[in-house]
Amino acid sequence: MKAVWATVIAASLGCYALKLAGVSLPASVLNHPRVQRIAGLLPVAMLTALVVTDLFDANGRYTADWRTVAGVGAGAIALRLGRSLVIVFLIAIVTTAALRAVF
Amino acid sequence: MSTTTTPFARPGDQHSEPEAFEERPAITRAALGIGLYAGVFGVTFGAVAVASGLRLIQAGLLSLVMFTGASQFALVGILGAGGSPLAALSAALLLGLRNAFYGVPVTQILRPRGLRRLWTAHFVIDESTAMAVTQRTPRAGRFAFWATGLILFMLWNLGTVAGALIGRGIDTSALGLDAAAPAIFLALLWPQLSRDRGPTVALGAAAVALGLVTIAPAGVPIIAAATVAVAAGLIPARPREQRGRADAERDRPAGLGAAQR
Image (cartoon, rainbow over all chains, first blue to last red; front, side):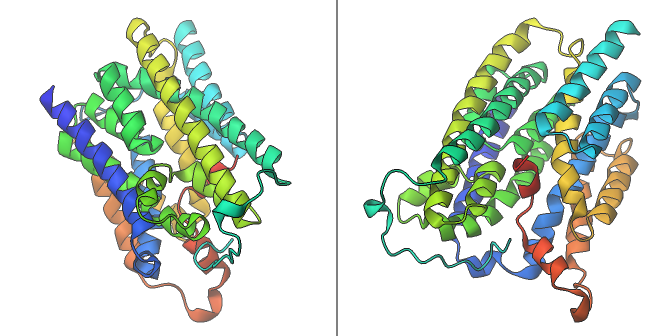
């Protein structure tokens, strides 16, 4: 329990510190092309990793609840069709919940 | 949209500005719309957080102090999956790093000085930055930043508390909420895939993360995937004549695409 508190506090302060650094550091530090390229690609890598582990990793084993995968898949189709974030989100959870209720 | 070199001339400074201006109602409407979805996601975050084993006060603290959605979802997800505190912390910070880069355009528009930096910094997120940088004048940009930041902050936090309260009494998987986090991550990822090297990095990251599932402790596959972004970013840009458009795209702060929809 203490570890959770420590994580919550450290991560919260750390994320704030990153924002503060952004408005405090000289622009020249953050405008370096290589630094910018890495910073731009970081969310791509991490969000992808979060999606695949959320879907296919359960306690260190490969597993997938097909209803969750189908729900997120339906969300992906909505994204492809250019729907907004809320619609994508609602389609994903409603699809998953409906499949789970039926099967 | 160049966000790197936009030295706005500001003859009047903020003290002599008239209250009303043309874009104000439209900006307010857009900010309310963004706030509404933030409220919905806030409820989800609160529910997912307590389902992952956090207490209401911890979920609330994350929304109040961390106040950056992707990092919050990643943190509770990794903790909920039994990941180590260090893995959860690293993932939150790596995802929060993009906010530092939003500081550059935000500072050019808002010019916060002294202690105002402390206050302004807290509201530098995807949505407030996107709204600020897409306005035509610095004055509208400042209004858009604060309208979006403050409305979103309020509704995100109210939503978090509501979600955490509701989440205690419900079966989150019956409501399909286990699909919520991956769907949100996917929606945030989607516009980023058009970035130079985006698809390659996504494929590489997926391979690294999945490859480590059975070997590494929970959360570590996500941190390890970050190395793919670092490696891809270190490779020098393409030859000079092919650059230009790709450059402008690349220099855009991460994550802005998702906020504007």
